[in-house]
Every structure is written in structure tokens, then in C-alpha cells.
Length: 336
Image 1 (spheres, helix red, strand yellow):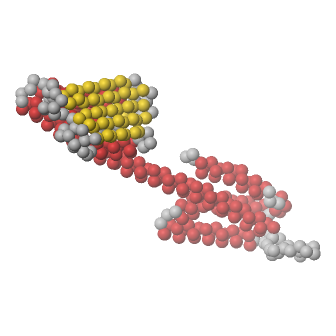
Image 2 (tube, rainbow, N blue to C red):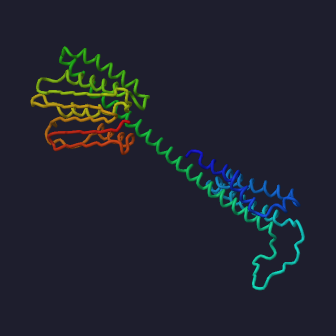
Image 3 (cartoon, rainbow, N blue to C red):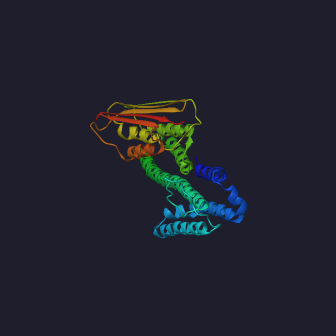
């Protein structure tokens, strides 16, 4: 709970401490030494507040702060010692029954009560303070890790975009060089793709419909430059197009199919499947590898693997099979 320490503080100050004071024989003291009892009560609450607000945070700080925390502890003990040293009355001589041993015969009852309550306040305030500081430290660590992960994700996204742009421009260059009739339609689709990259650059998540549309356009652009030796099959079945997904995540694997699965002289087939049902996304690709026996993953795939690990820890499964002839990718993501 975010405010757990505050709730414990209120419970102690409003319930626990008053009950502990009430359990002490204070009736006579309050009646005869009202000012002293009020002063002692105010002091106990001040000890609790000082410990929670200053002493314990200081002890978790640097060396100078730790020294300040220790001085506050010494100071609170000193003030309590002074308060307990105030003599409210002259005690009568003690008469002991035979066999009864009094370990602290010179400490009066109200002094014992003051020190007991002081130790309870000290122990409780330190326990709650340590709990709060522990939670604060954990929150700082989580925040630092989140910022680090975010920075890494932005780095991977920045690396991926030029990667796609270079490969697509290279394909367009080939179409215009050969005066292919599909060059102009491909350029129009490429402009649309660049528009998507630009608009998604500052977004952590985009609708699944936008990502799938980008994949369609990418497949269309790449397919225009292929001859009849290569067959491309794209199947998309999305039930909830409004689901959010990180941009430029799936297309990395699609790009890999066209980069390594196309041959101008050998028959090949590129299979791309994307389906979603009840928040479960299933994405799969399959393609031949040219030249055969080409093994290894490149920057785009590796970046995508790292992004998945940062964005969906424990909520995704990525399986890549590469036997040197066929490259298969299977990715499952729990989006909800």
C-alpha cells in the first residue's frame, strides 16, 4: 500500500500510545502533576515525529546525515533523562517483605513509566521508519530500472527505424533503376510507411490495427519487386483491433523474411500469420534461407528480442528455429 506507513503512524499516535499511557497508573499523577504529564506527553509525540521525519531518514543518508541522526538519538535520550530527573515528590522509605528483591529501588514509578513509554515510542517509530525507508528504496530502484528499460527501448527503436528505411529504399532504388511499373505505387506506400514511423516515434503504444496496416503496406512494397519464383502469403485475423502494442515490433520479423527468404532463381514461399483472440496475440513467419546454411541473427532480430524482454517479461514466448534451410519464428504475447 502506498500510504501504509502513514496509516500505521496515525494508528500508533491516536490509538496505541494513548492506550499505553492509560495502562499506566496516571490518575494520581495527572491530578497532582498536570503540567508535568502534559509536558511528558508532548515530548513522547515529538520523539515519534522527529524520528519519523528526521532521525531515520538521516540514518539512511550520507555520512554527515548519519552523524546528525545519531545526534538526534542522543539528544532525545538526554531530554528524556532530564525529564525523568525532575523530582515530583519525596518518596517515602520503602518497606520490603522478606524475600522480595527490588532491582531498581531508586527509580520512582513515574520515572519507570516515562522511560518505558519512551522506549516503546523509539522502537515503534524506528520499525515504521525502517519499513517506510525500505519501501522508498525499493520504489527508487524500480523507478531507476524503469527509466533504464525505457532508455534501452528507445535505443532499440532508434536502431530499428534506419534499418527498415535503408532496406526499403534499396528495394525502391532497384525498381526505379529497372523502370518497373510498380515503382511509383511502391513509392506511395513507402511514403505512407514513413508517415507511420514518424507519427509512432513518440508513442510507446499504438493500436494493433495501425501496426497490422503497416505490415500490409510493407509486404505490398516488398512484394512488388519479386518475380514469380517467390510466393508471399499474409494472413491476418484480428478480433480486437483497438488493443495496444509497441510500434515497429512485429515488422522486424517480416523484414527478415524478405531479406533472407527471396531468391531470383529458386522457388520460395514466405508465410506470415498474425492472429489475435481475447488479448492473446500469435505471430508466426516461415521462409527459406538464401543462401542455404546461412546461420545467425542480425541486429533487427536481436533488438526485437531485447524489446520483448523489457516490455513483456513473463508475458511472451519467442521461439526461433533455424536449421540452415528454413527459418521459423513463433511469437506469443499476452497483450491484456
